[in-house]
Amino acid sequence: MTDPASPPARRALVVDDDPVIVEFVSRTLAKAGFAVEACGDGMMALTMFRAAPYDAVVADVRMPKLSGLGFLQNLRLSAGSPHRVVLLSSMDDAKTRRDALAAGAVAYLVKPATSQAIVEAATGHPAA
Image (cartoon, rainbow, N blue to C red):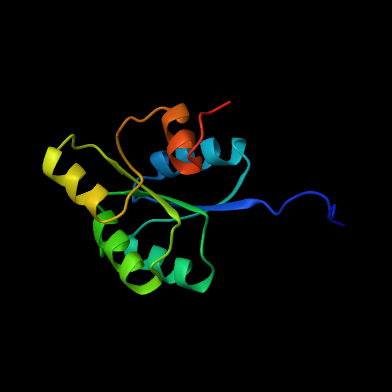
């Protein structure tokens, strides 16, 4: 039985083809109060998001089938949603960062990103 006074859990989607990163980010977001789901490529993420939108998405930039930037661009075109999308990358590339932010990412974090940076970007608030 759910407590009617408690708000529904925020939902987050973690998208990365590296299982170690998926585990770390998923655990980090779960500790911050998110109900977390994960997948390994941008096409699956787009399908999952369209089926049931998430409050936050943390996605790798370079993935098979559809990049994180491609996912973000498709998401914005189809949903026009204000959902928080955070892109992660092992590349600290100024052009990719600009492209990500111009496409609507709320943050572009370079791996290895800290738990605090991930939570702050996903929530829009300082981590506790």
